[in-house]
Image (cartoon, rainbow, N blue to C red; front, top):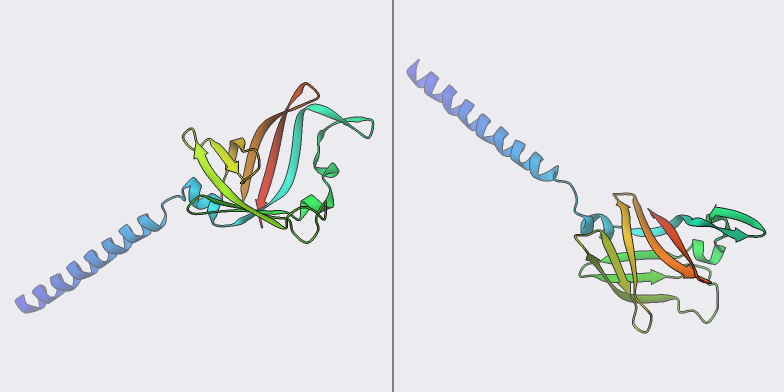
Length: 160
């Protein structure tokens, strides 16, 4: 009986220690993805574009600019990879035949990962406030000045 109790205790102890290892493994796997991981594990396509204040398009004041985005822009793909490589791909159609099919530059988070900065060699860099970033959506906000008026544009990209 004593030998049986010892064996039973050994089996229980082994089972408990293995199950506690599994629990720790589950906790590690459940760790939320970092912003870098969410940004870099996919490619992105523009899915929405808004502006504030409204702009005049075809004689109407509009804030939703997405219906006015040219088809040649809708198939463009953005990708971000480590270490901080930013890639722009024109897609199947180009707005201008002189445009390069792809560009490779760099990206970086700034201000505690609340700002995304992108640069391409030979082009002016851009910075965007990160409105939201999750596993399927990247939402960026930028201020642009057109004819002396400041517009806040919000770009929404979805995972391709």
